[in-house]
Image (cartoon, rainbow, N blue to C red; front, side, top):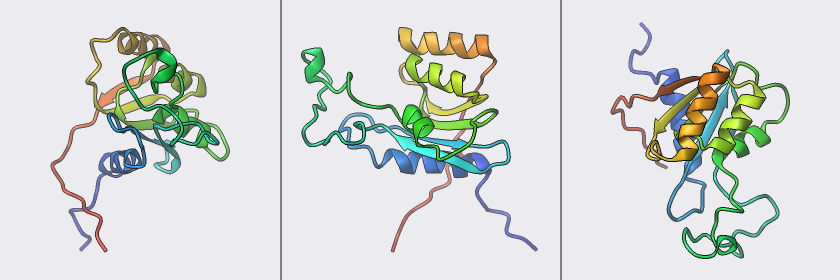
Length: 159
């Protein structure tokens, strides 16, 4: 008889998104993303961080201050990194698992690449104009939205 307590696809892919978030060096918000095909194959992963070639020790990570002295004009979001990190092929009809609901800029990239479903962990910025714009664009373009429902299963990494 086969094992019955294996991870569901949603647990597996959201777990990878959350694990990817752990690579972020942002001291306030760590976001991860995992893009999968309609055949449940991982196409790409990403996390929020500075662009390749920009030494993140020399970049600002602050949230407040003059715009150019904050992280906001520089950080690549997890969703965009996952889209840009794909090695080959189309993302048409794929799903993206994200630990935080996508901003309006990432929503545009998700829609443009043909991703058809967004599965998200939390939506803590739901009341912001950026997220409201994301939801409007997703609705108009037919991208399905689904909040991940945690199972309470604990997964640990150990040596």
